[in-house]
Amino acid sequence: MIQNDRAFIQSDLRAFIQAVDQGNQLAVVNGAHWDKEMGAVTEVLYRQKVEKSPMLLFDDVPGYPHGYRCLYGMFGSPLRLALAFGMDPGKSDNRLEMLDHFRNVIKKGFKQIPPKEVQGGPVLENILRDDQVDLLKFPVPIHHELDGGRYIGTACGVVTKDPDTGRVNIGTYRVEVVGRDTCTSYISNGKQGRIQRDKYLKAGKPCPVVVIIGCDPITYLAAGYTMADKIPELDWCGGLMDRPQEVIRGELTGLPFPARSEIVLEGEIMPDETAMEGPFGEWHGYYAGEARPEPVIRVKRIYHRNDPILTCAASQKPPHAHLFERCFLRSAALMDSLEGAGIPDVVGAWTHQAGSGRTFVAVSIKQRYHGHSTQVGLVASQVNPVGYVGRWIVVVDDDIDPTDLNDVIWAMGTRCDPKSRTTLLDNCWSSRLDTLVTDYGKLTNSRMVIDACKPYERYDEFPKVAQTSKELAAEVRAKYPQLFR
Image (cartoon, rainbow, N blue to C red; front, side, top):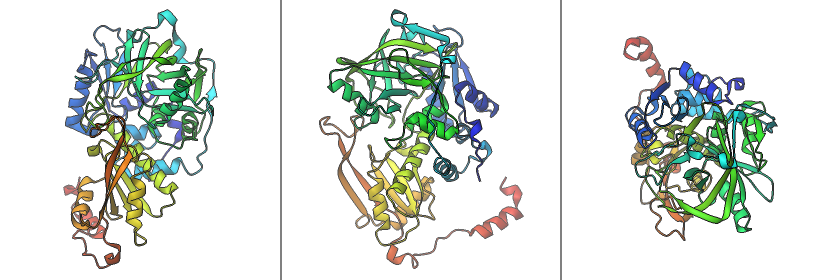
């Protein structure tokens, strides 16, 4: 059983980096250039080593002071994600066990704890106002060779507030530098930050915004986790840590941000001013969506720590440096959604790296009735996070490990009749980032539900699996330990 001590969940990026270093998973790289080189180093390394790659801290970036650093691959391994959640990192090999433990922590005895407002914190060590603002005082990378510009916001948290309800939202949306004090942000249709932003812009009003560039681990996880609209991310952070997240309110907008953030931008999204944004190497491994006009963000304040750290996430063709945590969080969110729909005996789920953490999903169930597997597949195809740009949904029995692609494909090849046990859906929620969308006036796609479970009417008579029993496997491991070290 994975142990958890929420007292050790880090609300400070530097403390997290130190813990990762103690776990021998930190590499400091000196001298890499902001212009494509940092992103290339990260991609090449992760393509070679995948989840065995270290977290990369880039320093001595040409043209910038020593100590102005960029961090890639924050949660790129099971050990680092376990550290972020306060789990015993020695117990982080079993993905489904990690997933079950995380979901248990945020459900059993979990209560939302509102943030605690404080008047000071490390992020206020430096404050740049108005004409002092210069976004390129930091080593903002060009992450990919064909990016349209320098992206300061990738592993970030964009903070907005609903003008009707007052709910504060934090989401991870890309932010491109346009000028000394201007940037743009692309937010996909249907996302909470987009809905809140558009309420202001449609009324002809500027939208107050804060962008957290150097995110602490727990805020970044909250920004990327799909949760119910009614749950404020900062309250969720407090509940996960079992203590309030300490926040400061911006001088101009009053929006909250963690007091131990590295870099924070504060300003307004303009209702009548746009600039070209994109292209950018996105989550699916393509430059998709083209360069298009997006509302301009006028940055009027920068708050930052001494020797600030930019948290970065460069998406490439899978596998890449920030895909593991996306798969984990989206799998947890899918389990939450299926459970919330009242479906019994969902055993596990995994959004696979090979599907960019979104387009190929496996769900395992203990079949209880005729139509159970069909119900699970259809519901999974439409709920968060699969409902957005999903593609392939595979339902398997509980003897199949949904995290193991070999297991899943074996089930597809031996338990699914393509003619009678697949369902094609059309007119589903998609995005301009979808590589197969060509009409930006109709952002929809199709998806396939694959029932790779044993036919329920033949469940007990289905051919037996040719595999060594757990009892015999334990015997031979004990008898020949030198073979299994």
